Each structure stands twice: as C-alpha cells, then as structure tokens.
Image (cartoon, rainbow, N blue to C red; front, side):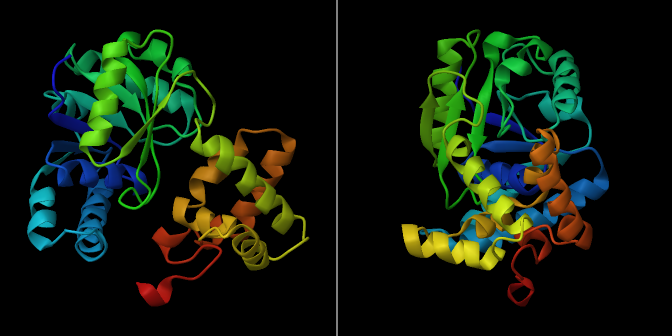
Length: 287
C-alpha cells in the first residue's frame, strides 16, 4: 500500500474545514473542495479561526505552526483538479445518501485509480455508498468528531469488500494526523460513538420538546449525575443543529416530530449552535 501524502477533503463545512486543517497541521498537503466561491470564502474564515484556536488551545502550537498549516491548504471549486493527485479523498458533505452517491459517481471518473475514498458520514453505512464509488475495495468510512483538535477519535469502518491493506493504511493515516484510531470490525450504523451518543441526544430532545424539562435543566442533571463535562444540549451546540435535524428528518414519525421541533424553535431562528453564535445557549459574547 502506497504512503498517503496528498489528501483531498470534499466539503468545507464545520467538520470538513476541521479535517482539512488538522490534516495540514499534521504535515500533509491538502486540497479542500467545495461547490462555489462563496463556500470557499467561508472556508477561509473557518481556517483562520481554527488557526487562532490551535495557537491558543493546542499544546505546543504557535503561529508558525498554524501559518504553515494554512500554507499547505489549497482550495478548489473544480472537483477534477481537487482530486487529480490525491492519495486519499475524505468526503464530508451533507448526510444525504443520494447526494453522496452522486458525488462518488462523479469522483470515480476523476480520481486516480490508486486513490482511496473515505466517507466521514456519521450515520450512513459505507455499504450503502460503495457501489457508487467504482472501487469498493478502496472505499471505507473514516469518522471524526467535531472539535477534532480536542475529541481525537477516528473510527475506521470498512465493508466486506474493503481491502485489508486499505483499511490498515487509513488506520495509520488517522494516527499520523494525531487521532486515536478506533477500528470498527463490522459495519454498524452509528459506529461506536454515535451508537452511544444519538440515543442520548434523542432522549434529551424528547424531554425538551415534550415540555418535561428545560434544555438547561436536562444538561444540569446529566452533568451532575454522571460527571460528564457537557450535557446533551451543549453537545447539540458543538455538533451544530443542522446535522441532527437532517438525521431525524429521515427517521420515523416520532423522529420527524423532533426534527420539526428543532427547526421551528431553533434552526428557523438562526440558532444553529456554536458556529452561529447561538443554539440552546448563547455564545455571542465570546465571538
């Protein structure tokens, strides 16, 4: 298996930008792709914000290291150009199966035959996507958590078709960018992290949406009773409310009711979480 040195990240939203920056910070050349110049302008703002965060919060970091990371990131709106030299493509686009399938179908015709494809999907099984990739033996999931510099797990999960050498190469890559690789030996919706986290978040939303308890009080109970540093609604804000809403929208009737509650009371009011300055909590004074 060839060494991974050039990495393309598809999607420069909150987590895509973090993956791109962490990868560049770890010494890799990174191509960051998004669909338009407006998205890439936002990405540049995210990269600058991450540079400031790393310089402040990451032990051993300084402006020289973050400046070097920024210099390793090149942005593209041309997908073919973005993946032309990629050893690894990490896809971090919205959690919509049809969109991912369409993207991989296009990607399969543009990327070199050697390129490994990895989805950062938090809920979709890689087996639902693999046939669209044109290279199921070189495709798997690499799931990283939001606030990547702090929450350093990297869940690696293949399908029955994934070449073991590809799996091992991505595990090694995850370690090389400072993550703690978590090999998931069988396909599991939600992997390890979200198999534990999603039921907690859904239960919290049900309590608040049903009028049983205020979100802040739900968080207070969870922190006090378990010793956890964050409550579920604080975690919602870290993740951003859009992704949980999209996931719930594709669930059963009860899940769709929770999605509607999130949309009406928070998303439609611009309360998207930390990234927007307000979610279940206000962060505007910190901006």
